[in-house]
Image 1 (cartoon, one colour):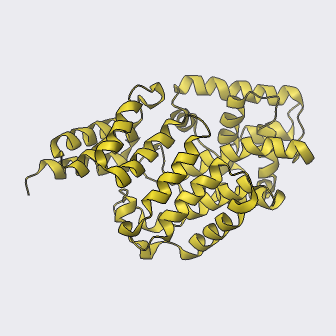
Image 2 (cartoon, helix red, strand yellow):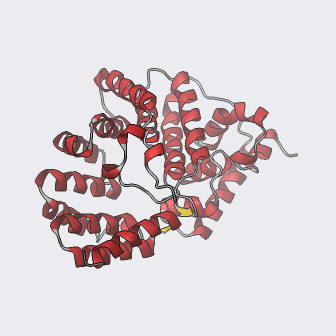
Image 3 (cartoon, one colour):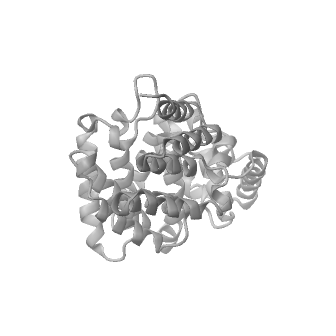
Amino acid sequence: LATPQAALLDRAADAVPEGDRDDSLALLFLCCHPALSPAGRVALTLRAVGGLTTAQIAAAFLVPEATMAQRVSRAKQTVKASGISLAVPEGADLTERSAEVRHVLYLVFNEGYTATGGADLTVPELSTEAIRLTRMLHRLTPDDAETAGLLALMLLTEARRPARTTPTGEPVPLAEQDRGRWDGRLVAEGVDLVSRTLPRGRVGPYQLQAAIAAVHDEAEDAGATDWPQILALYDLLERFGPNPVVTLNRAVAVAMVHGPAAGLDLVTALEADKRMARHHRLHATRAHLLELLGEHGAAAASYREAARRTAGAPERRHLTARAHRLETPA
């Protein structure tokens, strides 16, 4: 017989009736049950709760779509066969399983803020849903500093949404955004969360990322950004384990503090990381740093390479336009 859990798993989040949305947090924990493999938990939650397509999930994890489809299918079968109840865990089980839920919510938010493919740069409903669920998790575990840090990170990032696209939908780099259009209410709430959670004791990755976002958001303009503080925070973040995306972001901070050449050295070192082989941001970051060095020809070539590697139409247009600008005589 089909169970309520199975029925929910077979529907994407955007197809769940309004009355069923109250079960979203319980469904998150269902999808993150220890009976599932770590990869299966993330994949199933993104599919069943976040509403991402299999292609979007595969792009987020840099794996073939067929591999991700098998992962989702196996996870569904495990849930259906295990008879797992649709309920929010308690006590130590809640603490342990909250970490995987945070990771999933982080991925859902990121997909909503910068879509991995398609005609639009953003999918606002995904980011909104991720924030809603993270608020619920924060209310459930108010003393969990990492959950508070994740919520702060989302709010501080979401605050920039009104200024991060052009009228035609292309992305606007952070340094070029009209900060007067940022949502001051979200910035204030995010900064307050960071200020209250950082002093609590052991600091985690989400708190550090939120602190970095807060430094950016509190600067009156791009020139006032406290890059040495951001670099120090990235240094701490890297201690939590090798992460090529963190290293790539740190390369920009290194460039702003020690010069573009120093940042480029870090970018070059990342080329050997297979996880970044298909990642357009590696080439986009190299292009940006080459542009800062005044090497416009090489920068344009890297922008075009980044454009070829991105599945998102708005980012492709943006990167191509930057290359064209550098190739066109003033």
